[in-house]
Length: 182
Image 1 (cartoon, helix red, strand yellow):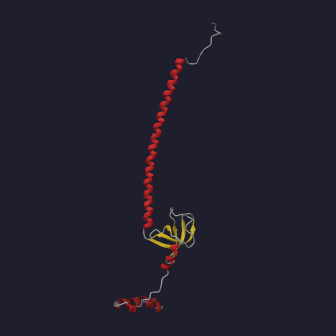
Image 2: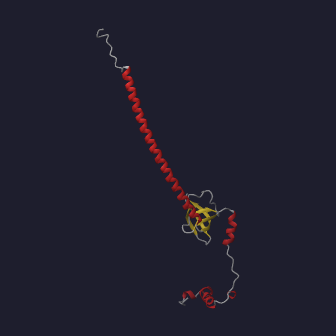
């Protein structure tokens, strides 16, 4: 063979190909094993995180239940202000700007709906059903008591002090302007 007929075969021989394939397969196996180990670690992390989030959810739900089970104040809804606040009218005649808990459906509070508020925070914790409105109205309408001072036995000194402190000021408007010791 002459120089012009000589062809260089640069492709690996069959024995070399097997070696490269084994090496490639081994490298690929190691790579996939590392990926599997990494995914297993991620799975454990996600499981732990899920467990922590479930615990946190339970604590939050218990806190909401405690808030809703505290002595509640009854009020009437007046208007929604923004997404998380509203204006309510209390049974004593004052209006309040309140926060609405995230657990409350924003479509439930309607004009004049009866609401249950947390007694310290004045946060809306529940919207009362419409059938509760009539019983609430009967509670909020005060009747003039039929009891007179004569119906109260004994306590003469206390009755006299009440008369001086309350009735006297109501019947004699000029007394508070004077320093009369009441």
